[in-house]
Image (cartoon, rainbow, N blue to C red; front, side, top):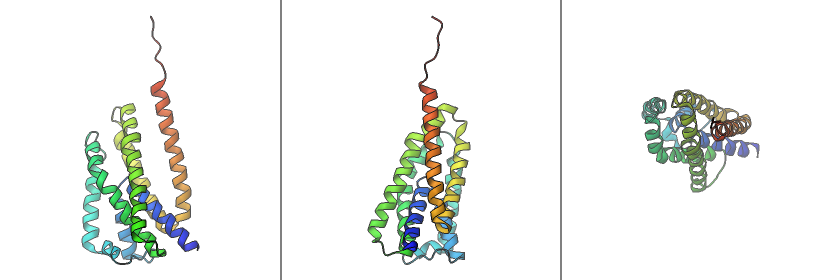
Length: 195
């Protein structure tokens, strides 16, 4: 039973991280599946272990990491990623959940699609515009770098220590909610005028 819970938690963590960056969690799963026994991918997901897949994920990951650091370009990237990130989340959820339990692949893909899509929507519609507007675009590369680091950590923890990953995810969501609330409060405060 513990393996089933760990598998599902790991699947949720991987698909949530795909909502921020599609390629880092896919790359992490590919590398861990190729070189360790921490995750074993069943067919057809074992295709993630091929050198071609790893190379393509690495190249696409570099493009997304660079594009996400540039103001305005990051909005174009987010628009393109609106289709890619949920699909990556669906693949990750189905691939990682199926290694532990016999969850129906269609149900697993729907869960991953919804989780990654929700995280992507929160990032691209709510969090990023607020941060960019409040920092005049200067915060874009900083926030993007923090996102990339978090996605990498969450992806590894989702496979290695899924219960710890759950605690970290809750803390991150709490921190982001506080940050967004603080920024919104600052923007709403009335400006004093001498009339």
